[in-house]
Length: 214
Image 1: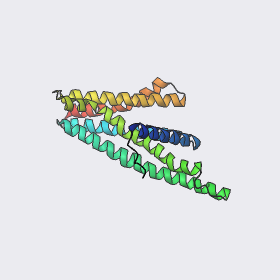
Image 2 (image 1 turned 135 degrees about the vertical axis):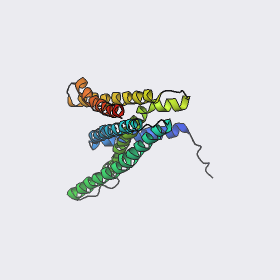
Image 3 (image 1 turned 90 degrees about the vertical axis):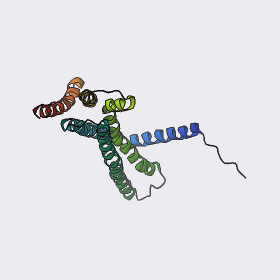
């Protein structure tokens, strides 16, 4: 009787690394890295602006609970990032890849079942969906980190300090996205970053004026 294999974290890690190499290889074959990049940038931008609006909206409405700031941002980020960013992106990308696979089969008059092309058509949507969800979830969570730190440490920090610290981090992240876009397009990277950052700065100024007027 064969002895059951013992669980080994190293074996799991090695398997995950092989899977990652396979997925990135298939993504290169199907030219999916550009699509994943666009989805990452688009969802990062949407997630950051949504989270920035939530934080500033809470501040203007007089919210003082740290849990409310964190909870609304985390809830919105996971809702947008997981259900729209991951699941919806995976399903739509999977449908497109399988459509291309079946069209290729009809042209070749031969099934591609079990080939590298079928594996790529099934794994590449996972790659695109992962990058899509990463931008919508992780960057907003980094932005709300001042509130998380205040909650964990228990330090009594004024709400307006946390709000503007969080806004500053998100604006910096927007600048980073713009800088990255500039490196892709070949434009001036600083100007591209500033254009994105100005959108966030405009949101902060708008809500600040509302707060002052109120």
